[in-house]
Image (cartoon, rainbow, N blue to C red; front, side, top):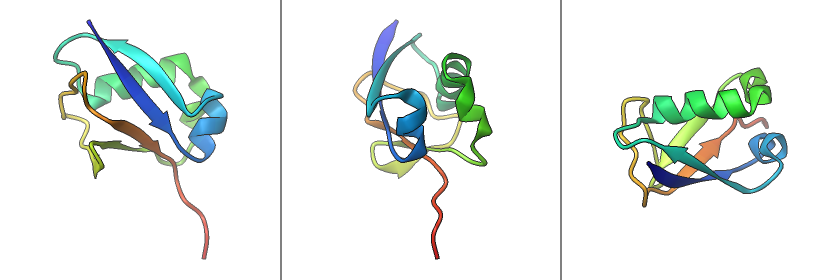
Length: 81
């Protein structure tokens, strides 16, 4: 089991109620596993049209295996013109 820190931006910060959360994941868990656990813990996230995950300042595919020292960020949809 490893602890990971997840930073939230924009509307995700409001949904989570804080700028950063910690989550416990098993070794070998992927971005998809983290996303599933996040949606289970914070069902309001499901209402977002999209949610990108960045790991170490790069957009991450769902298959990426997470490490304890990874910097993870939730990037919600951006509006503007």
